[in-house]
Length: 185
Ligand SMILES: Cc1cc2nc3c(=O)[nH]c(=O)nc-3n(C[C@H](O)[C@H](O)[C@H](O)COP(=O)(O)O)c2cc1C
Image (cartoon, rainbow, N blue to C red; front, side):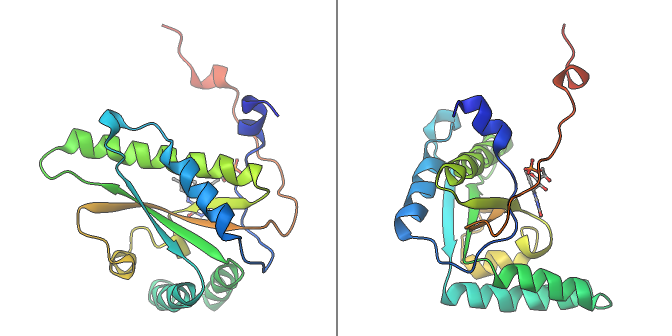
């Protein structure tokens, strides 16, 4: 497959088989991530791998969050927790924040985003499905997740990546032709 085909075929995969991911594959995802471009080689990312017992604790944290956030939407809570329960691996990705250096901190966030995309493409090659979550059970903007991973304050959470063997074919998505998004100067 060409690189361009791989880019076009990458999908956000959100439903998985209840099957553990081999440690070797997890290592391959993380290694792919570390080859992402990054300004001045700061390699500003950190990865927190959540599975097994820590995933059970994550589920409890997510249940508390959902109850607080959506007290009148029991079906939404149930469905969100079902998604979590069927996910065997999650990886929280952080970017280093440099106090007093907003520009470099921003660049670090971009680099961490690139690292997530690299993992996404690597997952595809390993026949794994992946989705980058920020909202809902991704908990990216909830202080609880910060406490959960136990990261220092100078690490900003960029995404929670859910990974698993796809349970079903993922329907294609569409894109607006680049011509409509491009100004030739
Ligand atoms: C920064 C970012 C945050 C995202 N957050 C979520 C999320 O919280 N929940 C979710 O289901 N998908 C999330 N996604 C995945 C997008 O919804 C998905 O990429 C989009 O629907 C396009 O589908 P495709 O990736 O299969 O082409 C996120 C993607 C990005 C880049």
